[in-house]
Length: 283
Image 1 (cartoon, rainbow, N blue to C red):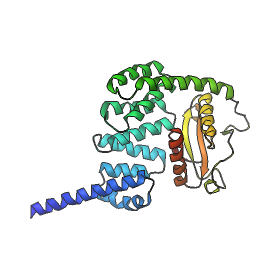
Image 2 (spheres, one colour; image 1 turned 45 degrees about the vertical axis):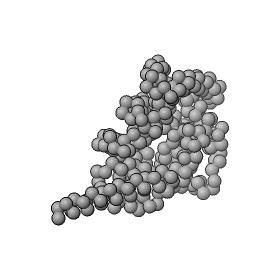
Image 3 (tube, rainbow, N blue to C red; image 1 turned 180 degrees about the horizontal axis):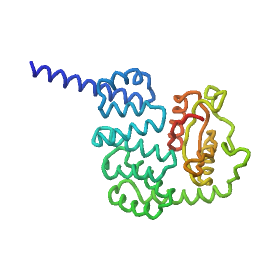
Image 4 (cartoon, rainbow, N blue to C red; image 1 turned 60 degrees about the vertical axis):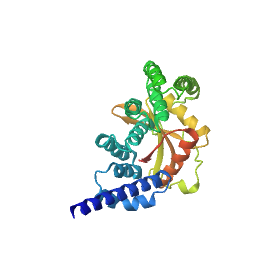
């Protein structure tokens, strides 16, 4: 009798895990409806399941809240099936937020703990670029040599050369395109005319959502990224924000009535420009 009871528990767990993996696959493919319906039930049934946490993080529309869920997943279940995915999500969040030191700290975990992950090539590239743009060029070159030995098939030497060249070119380009932010309009700098469809527009632009692609302490870096996005056909603007007595130049894209619409464009930007974005609520 006890054996049958344990067998039922095992079968129930395996079925639940299979269902979770299926829902995660659907969300990653762009379909969120089923997962959103089942999540409250699954969360109650499997509160500490790492797959449930990963699904919950994927469904969370607020970037910072999603990031905290992925941090919890990694801290509590580092060797789980989605441990490497969680690390990448946190690293990409910090990278898109312009917090490159924090991004590098997380992305460094990938070659150390998840060297066989499907994300390793992208992790190495973002890690090296995070070091470069945060002013740690020599450290980036040092790690490129380490990764060259560790991952001989990734052409790390070519990646670091391209990243350094792109960074130097972006500095030269941005210097010629910078315009001062006027005292009259310190909050929004040079917003581009929207290239988005009518359904993504909101009547009151202080409401709704936008995509954020970066946060920079140097204005020239923000201008360079804004121009890069606009040259690809997307609308972009720069918001000037003050945090902890420090000025940040935030690159934001579009105005959307729902977070789902913002996410849809974020996927296109990721596909076209290989640029990570996060959904933010307009203030």
